[in-house]
Image 1 (cartoon, rainbow, N blue to C red):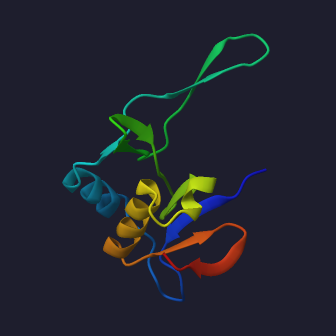
Image 2 (image 1 turned 90 degrees about the vertical axis):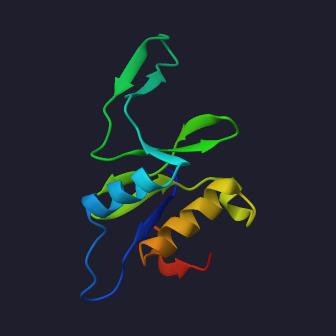
Length: 119
């Protein structure tokens, strides 16, 4: 099982990221947009295509000339799977996530540790 990366406001008394402020950020950043199409996966045994429902405000990130799945909004947090590319400080998605966290006055964490990641 993989690790998730989470953007959240942590600490006592801190409100979660509201759906309205997440959508506002998506609407003002040309490199982000709310995902409109369901996810499609392929069953490796049968080859059958399976559609997976979108979350409440899943986002896409424009990178390398295409829109790529990015962050999912879930109960006041933004979540994505941690990938090895995030270990590189120059990774475009990592930099975008760090910028989003700063804009939302949030921190970047994993679901494996309580300490914020210093990005």
